[in-house]
Every structure is written in C-alpha cells, then in structure tokens.
Length: 467
Image (cartoon, rainbow, N blue to C red):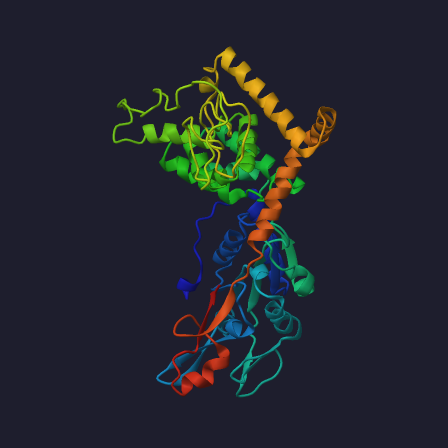
C-alpha cells in the first residue's frame, strides 16, 4: 500500500544519512524497537519518515498527550446505533500488518500509559479490552500474532525543563535501542539550510548557523530556556526564499519571544555578535509598517498628534509623571509614570526621564537618535531628581548610602541571573494550575466508565478538560 509509505520533504545531509544508515543496519539484524530522544525541532520525525520511505515501510502513526490512556493506545470505543463498537488503534493495525508504528511525543503521556510498551516489546504480550490478546507465541481464535516486520519507533523530547515531559528512557528505555538526536553539525546544517533557500549566499548562511549554535549553547548553560533548533533555522530560510530580507525573516520567526524583554535582548545580542544587525521589536515594527504598503518605494507622510515627526512626545522638563491607578500600558507620550518609550517621565527605555519605573508592561524602546536629542541641562536635571528620589527611598527603608552601594555591588554581577530565575519561576507557576476533567458532558471524549450508560441511552457520557 504505497499510500501508507511517507514521502517527506527531506534533504540528505551527512548527519541524517549516517543516522538512517545505522538504524537500518540494526533493523536488518533483527532489532524492532527504537527510541529516538532529542529536543523539539531537531528532525526526529523527518528522520523516521525518510527511513520509512527509503526502506518502503508502511507507517502507522500515534501522537500521545497528557490525557492518553492505555485504552486509547489499543482500542477506541464508540457508540453506533446504541451499540459499543471497538475499533482497532494504529498500534493494533501495525502489529497485524507488519507496519512501522511511529509513536510521537511519548514523553507527554502519563507513565502508567507508556509502560504498556514494556509488555508489548519485552514480553511480546498485550491484552486488549475486547478480550483479544496480542502475542508473539500463542495461537488461537482470540489472538493477534505479532507480524515479524512489525517495528516500533518512539520519539520523545529529553526530560525536564522546558518540555516538562516524563523520563521515558528511565521507565522503559531498556526495552529499546536508544539513540539521541542532536542538531546537525555545522557543515550539515549549512547544507540543509542551503537546500531550503538556494538564493542565500554562504556568508549569510554561516552567520545564521553560528547564531543558532550560540543560542543552543546559552540554553545548555541555562541562560535561556528554549533550545532553538534546526526547525527555527529552516523556518527562517523558507521565509527568505519567498520574502527577501534577513532581518524581517528573523523577526517573523522569533518575535513571539519579544514578550520577554530580557530574553529578546539576549537573542538580539547573539545575532548582532555574529554580524546580523537584528533590531529591537519597536524599531523593526515601525520600519516594517512603513515598508509594507502596496508600493514600498512610495514615501509615506505620517502625522503624529502631540508629537514630533519621529513619533516621540516633545521634550519638556523631567518629571515623575501621573500615577495610573488602573495600570494601563502607556507607550510614548510624556504624561504617565511607568510608561515605556516615552519622554520626560519615570519609566522604561524612554528619554529624558529621572529614573526607571517598571509596572510590568511590554517595553518599547526609543532610538539612540531620539535619546541624543535630550539636552545637557535636561539630563542634569533628571539626574538630580533621581538622586533626590534615591535618598528619599533609602530613608524610607532605613538604609544608608554606603549600605546601598554595597548592596548594588553585590547584586549587579548576578542581575541577569535574577531575571532568568524570575522567568523560570513564572514559567513553573503558569503550569501549576491544572485543568480537571469535567464529566457527564454532551460532547468531548467518551468516558470509558460511562459506556454501559451510553448503551442504555444516556447522552451525557463524555468528558472534557476545564477549569
């Protein structure tokens, strides 16, 4: 059945060809259970799909998640005309037909679910909910013999942060031939990206690959959480192939991280160190919006109400600014305390203000040219206001200037680490609230405990996640 054989878009780079050749050699000598562990986006699915294509293996596919159950892995119950109908899962079909069973996101499923693979692979036995038995040795009317060509290909992320998956290898890894899948080496990754964007020069490719290599190194050190993979680099190349402009392509892929200002700055610094002038979000956003008209050569005349022609509020005198009780985000302007990218007031990444005030909003930074417009007199007045505010604050908390300087000297070297720790704790806190199962619903997943009720006519036999 040729329709069961995958045909992925795949480019044969040295790293992946070597990996596929090694896996096929193991298959030829009798190995049938494989575990591929690697970060998201390193090419685990691509490698297995290409292997199936080369070897002409028919493929069955299952993607696991946190709500996956043993029953869902083997049989799927459904109600048809008041009768419970059990339908074979991809696992059962693969066992019968001798297909390659690809189990994706195995680290997301509960441990009590994935342990079923240990019974199937190590013992060659698995009892199904309808009374049938998958077996390697027994024969009978209610048995399903394991086809000699049946193979299992389990794909999993590495355990721990930031993927928060289970440790699949620790639980059942001894049943598999286990392989770690890293990102391709320098030359292989360059060759891969060149295949996706043939119009990009080698110098640019080297800059992109070096930048992503540095981002991965920062992830290994713990300075950033997400290990930027080949998937993101390929996405940039795909964008470049259709829409020229490297900076625009980078922002298109990476701007989701602009919500975290410290992380976004680190990403930008990495690309700038490797010769790619990646700008901050505000500067690029303004540039992109001006150049996105129907005729990009046409000069746009933009008017700013209450501002100068550059879009920034006019400079007056430094002041603290009005306090917004509702804590609304204020971008630009020169009226509100705690705004971003404004003028004169205490806020973040503006110009001419006396000191920094962070009220938890996304930061918008003014350009260096705009900051240079602040006069020496205004800058000196802002400095004096900041010093006076610091003395007042130190008196409130009972700390002398000497103690403050000592504290600042201790904190300054680890300030970046403090920001990283706050981000880590915030990510953990966001996962703390777990949605529970809401039962007796009219839609959702069938609740196995309500099958008999469904057969007798009850309509509320479903469950779904909710708060």
